[in-house]
Image 1 (tube, rainbow, N blue to C red):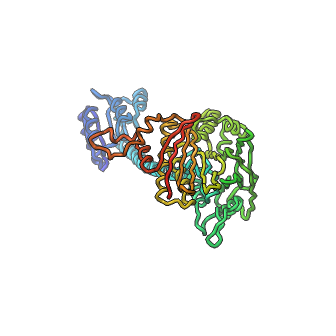
Image 2 (cartoon, helix red, strand yellow):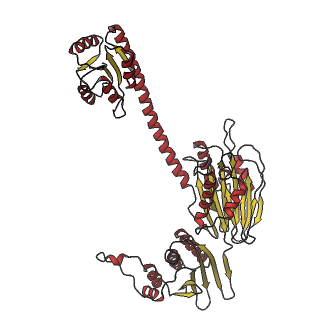
Length: 551
């Protein structure tokens, strides 16, 4: 039964109209003033239709209408004003207060009932629309949550390493919406080859992101039957040429007639020992080659067709020779197509931003370039997804065997906690090649991590600088491994060093808070695990040396 709240200070009107409306099957609640009406509506959530007299003592019909139509009231009310004053001023005043209808008390019962039926139809439509909107809001929230989760998943596909062998990486990835079609990555193909890439799927949103996810997974696959980056023959492999990799991607991602998806890509393979770089550019912007020995910048790339649009398609690759400390910049067209008015940012401005990017941390370099783009266009938001990848080759690993049965591993690293772990793994790999026992390798692995972290945190105050690491294996009359780690940061006082290395590590005392402090415990540990542990200072350089017998 539909409910109506009837408000009038005349008991005669209340009795007459209540009787008339009840005969039509309505549940009528009658009150004599506005205060009582508000109290009833507070306790009766089912009432959404109000018939109210215009002129009443206390809260008038106009004031009651304005209160019920305000945003402070919890639900929609269909409000009809009743008045014996059928003048234009009263009608305008009522409508301005938010009334949905205005009825003269002299109106016939039949017309009043028709207006009430029309009011309930309007109310039903409003409630249906409100319900649908609520359902849409819930659906939208679910979609937004799914998009947030998808965005988190896409972010998890991004690399976490900052250095592989002697190659340093930094990148910036910024989708223009929650998820995008850009992606970048780098993978270790074997001990001497690293592949890296940037690709850009057409369009934006879910379909582009799904395709980007699939392409990323395909490039990461190493299984014989699935790999596009390796050529397998009887359980042996060769590194695939970049052009062959792109051709395989083109065949795999051919689109149906009703699909508009395709992608552009820059795919390259670097030999970390020789510096030879092979690449293939397919519909993608040329990459920038920042040459250290000539202080020059070149644009490199081929005019191959996009990937996934036509089959068969032949792609051409290229080769360049890097020198130590050379830097490569790969990026998507979202950088070049940033706009200020009708003007594009373009390659010339990007090259200038790259050449002037001077920051202390390598990890911040790509962010600094993107900030230049955002400042130029005078807003942080970009109209397209942006991927920016910086690759720096430090040079070959210096691994030699001397006349005195001495093998040497030497490499320079940029400091970070992540780099410490990467360097320790490379030292272990070198020691394994020299048939050093697992126990000694694990001991020296821990020494590398502790000493490089110590330099990063204490010598460099967590600023990104360089560390030189040298590991020598001597197999002459006194077989041993010597580890040297050199930094140019704050020097440790000799007395402090001796105080740490002469102590024995003791189990922390739960009643002595100072015994839990970590200061110096790493140096104590190294001193106890190795045969010799020293520090020297010369020409502003601090060199920690560790020796471990392998006899």
